[in-house]
Image (cartoon, rainbow, N blue to C red; front, side, top):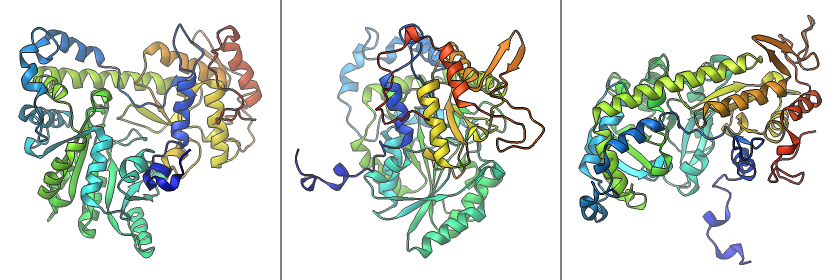
Length: 493
């Protein structure tokens, strides 16, 4: 093997973050993926935030509009024009269609200028492009926790930009406050860290919540006072399924007196709202002319294919389709969220109240042996290896409290959701007979005396739960690809 001294620092460092626990769960799924008939005892992927619920709406439109594709007899006449297109500005109709969709996904309360729409290779490429435009290696951005684990890769692996966490906790449902921002900012400055801006995800990944107008206004005032940038990752804007409604930074920006528009930037994508991550449609939308011009030149490194632009331009300029798609997706997400969270509540598991996103923030603090991140890892490995659900531990999102987990619910059909809930019921020892819930005495202890498992007496007996789970998982159907004892995901003991 060649010496690493001959390679770049990027090639030899761990900046990609592939070894985080967030990605370890994906590896367990890849080794032993669930399939309803071919591998019913495999790992169910609940770590992937993907919106598969409205696929049929898109497929129906494609069937009715064959001219939108250059790979059909009806559309092949445009093959030469589309395949030869190389302008990194993008098709004018594509940029117009994206601006139209962004507006409608935000309730048509704001309008977007197609001339400010810049293409990138998914939200990953869009976030990195913004970093290249706003910061130099060693500069840093404030990011409220918990936050998307791959931000370390997206924001800093190749740019050299650092993340300074802003700690938020469950005492106020993880809402970021001006006081927390000020504390993180001053601490960084005292450590000679150059803060170039603040990055927020709204709606939040992993919380599944939206920022209220007052909080968002406070954030805009904060960056304006400090003269630093605000990058709003709004890739889940179209996934809001219940009140309160989503508030876009553009709405607030207009209301803040003397707001410097040059400091405001939006990252968007179709990967979550439309459920098409494979199309790699990322968008940078900045109110800073210099950033728009620079990002457009940099988009040469991550363009959206002209064939994809051509199809999406036709699709997203169809107002009837867009309206129907957004309404259908919202209704289905609301129903799926209700089914899953209600199923968890039936076994004594609560989630942070959410109104958006493709996941819920599940509270398993009462199941920890003690309130430490080591105990969280023990529980998480048991969920991966024994329950065979790939959920994401809160520590991978840099949550300051152990025991929280992100669980995705929109990347599967309802049968798989029910299988997942059945496994959870078996794991915590809860059975149902008709409409009656029966608690296993070894698992749920309803003693009047106070105990370390919480005031409601919720308790998990690992040995009992594992035996009950194995009764559900038929040994005849075990996959030959099940994790082995030497797996890096060590079996809990």
